[in-house]
Length: 67
Image 1 (cartoon, rainbow, N blue to C red):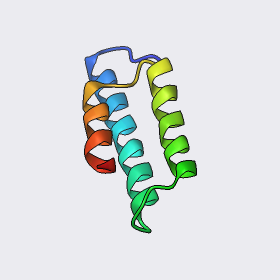
Image 2: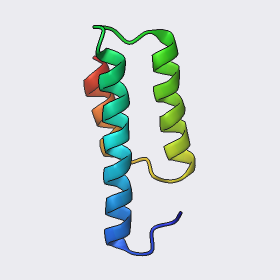
Image 3: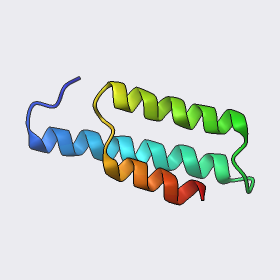
């Protein structure tokens, strides 16, 4: 699904950001992110990149959450 206008693009980016944050927080629930969890998160990022939904903001969120 390609965004048809700037508002659609912004909504798609917001949704992608929420999914990424939810995945990271779920992975961190036990106090650490194990290799399988990290692989799923990286897989989601790769999917977003290939669908052109990845933003610099998502990369910043990921780096802040896993450190």
